[in-house]
Amino acid sequence: MNLDIRCARPEDAEELSGVAHAAKAHWGYSRKYLKLWAEDLTISLQFVQDNAVFCAERAGMPVGFYAIESTDHGWEISHLWVRPQHMGTGVGKALLHHAMGWARARGIETLRVVSDPHAEGFYTKFGARRVGWAGSVPEGRTLPVLELDSRIPATPASS
Image (cartoon, rainbow, N blue to C red):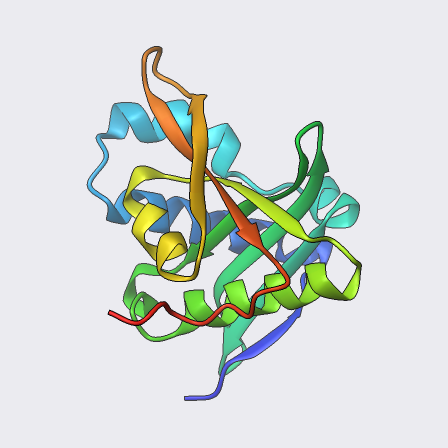
């Protein structure tokens, strides 16, 4: 089935939030943890207006999205989520490839990702390297900080 990637619109915010919440829940986190992270997983209309947010659709239905924003640490992929039933079908790869192209077109050489531990392997498969750790919630939880070189096409490393 074809996949289309387009700029997200503010009216997509609620649907994109649903994608993020469903994708995070897919990894088996407890309701307690999901509640802790609910605000971070919720995409607002203002966020869509203020950042580069792109939505992947199949048959007109959002199946994934990513967001890139400028932070104190440089340019960061702050969201990249795929609906669980579409994981493993190439949506994540297409979104990451699109994000890398977006960055390259703007002269951005490095994209930072503070990754969920379950997603680190996905990013490293496409050339990301771990450069550190970031604190998270609950207290004591840390997340891998990764960097991607946008000048390198997002193709999987050979096994």
